[in-house]
Image (tube, rainbow, N blue to C red):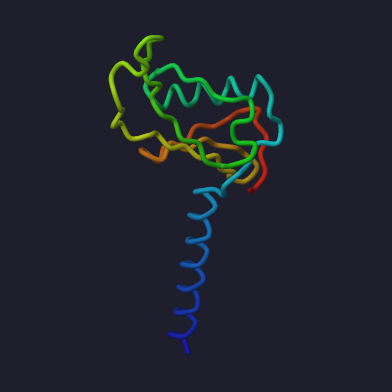
Length: 124
């Protein structure tokens, strides 16, 4: 009887631990208060994740999808088009997640989270 109770307690602990880990990972989210200010904040966080590289994002970033892919802009000139040829660099992937009531930008390469203070989001 004591073994059954111990086993049940162990199962309950494992289940709650799995739920806690899933909650910390967050659920895919969409922005609900898209504005120039939120775009500026997200742009600065993406730039920070990429080591200070300047990036340009749309004002509607994360309003229709929780996923974002960033590719390096190809250098072009007016006469010949693309200067360096095709880029073989892998795009950088980000996602917007909601953890409890907070929104985070997650850089998928490192799994690092960046808190987006002032950004409101809802589960996708």
